[in-house]
Length: 160
Image (cartoon, rainbow, N blue to C red; front, side):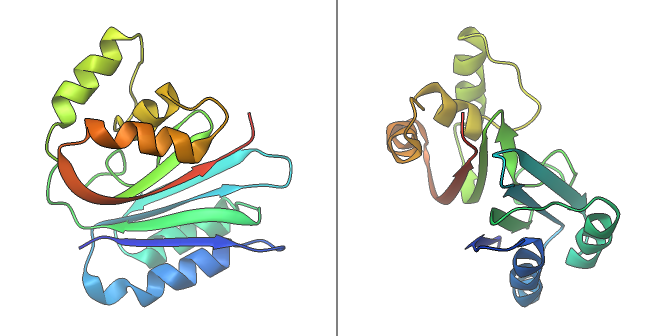
């Protein structure tokens, strides 16, 4: 079972996100991560394999600052536990976390490769970015019919 946390505040929210993840620790997980947009519109991401404390230690060493962010704990049902499979998945200015299995992951990857996209992680942010014309809500709605799955999804965008 994965856990998703989001926060918007007029102060740095990395600690708020971490506290939300700590409260979800009872669910079990293999990795954790967060993405934060700073006051200048730059997005930073940090992901780690293991418990939330491993992510907290990494955040101490590599702080992320900003007032808007999302965080996720992952329990691997598909794909091995790894930092590459940890959420958030990012493509340029879009970060995505999701709860659920995307059964048609590979056909989506092929579709996007045919359209010229290269991958470091999952296709969700790439697919959302394909239809993102300045409106994140529209991009998520337009992406949804492509997924053969049951999932919850939270997207974060930085200004572009």
